[in-house]
Every structure is written in structure tokens, then in C-alpha cells.
Length: 221
Ligand code: ADP
Ligand code: TYD
Image (cartoon, rainbow, N blue to C red):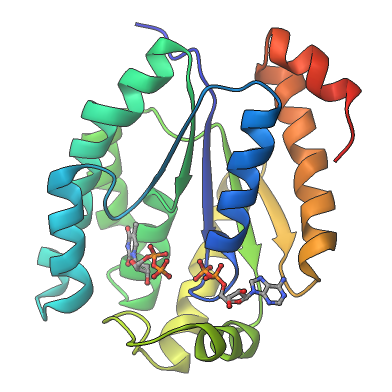
């Protein structure tokens, strides 16, 4: 069956501002008349949310961690994301497979080839239409996390070198597939970023939207 909806993912280091903007983008899209599924990874299904608890808090071997990310993703893709796209809904997902390339492949140094095997196996050539990468220097991400967070999970506890490798691996993903990515300079103020996001969303409505696109592109940010 054809995937009629548009699949959007949000990526970036912990503290970059994804969650802040995810809610705002979801509201913007709904206002524009889009029937939207807002979801996240790891998680997004009852089983996926249980796996999330494990991978965020339980020590485990790196391959186990990677397989659990993809186990949750397989469930999410097959039971929620793909059916939604087939029905014509749009999907906005806070993190997806680029996070596995960045965190397991880069941060934890598993390397991209192993992730690519799992990506092919689970996704079979299907993936996001558009990915917003919220890019910030490590120090900015850290400072924001410290402001806004309680207990750090297994990833947030990692050191600077881990997050430098993670950020580099995200940049390698952009270099591999520049047409899919919108790189957001997330050092800027929230209103500035929103302006940029609104313009990118209007472009997406033009290329993917039907009737909703016509009315939304007439409106402002
Ligand atoms: P993420 O989901 O990427 O981990 P959050 O959206 O939770 O990040 O943001 C982390 C913290 O940084 C929050 O306290 C949020 O209010 C703040 N924040 C997000 N974006 C910005 C920004 N552009 N400028 C200043 N603070 C921001
Ligand atoms: P996230 O939901 O962004 O956490 P928060 O909103 O609390 O910042 O993601 C949780 C962590 O999971 C994050 O540190 C990145 C990590 N992660 C991976 O390591 N690999 C993956 O494939 C995914 C989807 C997330």
C-alpha cells in the first residue's frame, strides 16, 4: 500500500530543544489542517515504551542496546507509523533511526555499517521524508539540560567525547542524504527557530499537502 502521509523526524543532542519544538510543530501542523500522529522513539507503542524504560536505565551490552532500539522501532513502524502514513496521516516523530546512527554508531562507536544492516532489515528502504536536525554545540546542549532536567538517563550521563562523536555522526548522516535534512541552528532564540520551522513546514505542505496546503500557505507563521 502507498504511504500517502508525510513522515517527519526530529533529531539532535539531548538538550538541543527537540521536545520544545516538537509540541509547537505539532500544533502548527494541526492548525494547518493536517491529521497528525505525534510520537517518539524509543517508545511510541506500549511495548516500545517498556523497552524505552530498559534502554534508558538498565546497563547492557552495546549490541543488546542497539537491538532493543530496533526492536522498539520495528514495532513502532509496523503497528503505528506505517499504518498512519497509509491512511494519509502525517507522522511527527521525536527521534528515529538517525539517532541509532548517531548514538550507537557514533557515540558508542559501533560504526555505521552494523546500524545500516538493521535499518535495511527493519525499514526495507522506507524512512522519513524530512528530518529536522537541531544542531547545537555540546556546551549549549549541556547547559540547557542542566537547567531543565531532573535525573539523567544512561545517555545523558555520558561525557563530552561521547556527545562530540554523536554530533559528528549526525553530521555524517546529513552529508549522506542532504536532501532529506533541514539543519536548524538551535543556538538561536526559540522565536527565531520557530520562524525557520514554519517556513520549512510551509514548503512541506506545498510538496506533500493537498487541500490543507492551499489554506496553510496563505497563512503566516
Ligand atoms: P531535547 O528534547 O532536545 O532534549 P528540550 O526541548 O527538552 O531538549 O530543551 C531543553 C531545555 O532547553 C528546556 O529547558 C528548554 O526550555 C530549553 N530550550 C530549548 N530550546 C531553546 C532555545 N532555542 N533557547 C534557549 N533555551 C532553549
Ligand atoms: P529522548 O526521548 O530524546 O530523551 P529526552 O526527551 O529525555 O531527551 O531520547 C532518549 C535517549 O535515547 C536519548 O539520549 C538518545 C537515545 N537514543 C539512542 O541512543 N538511540 C536511538 O535509536 C534512539 C531513538 C534514542
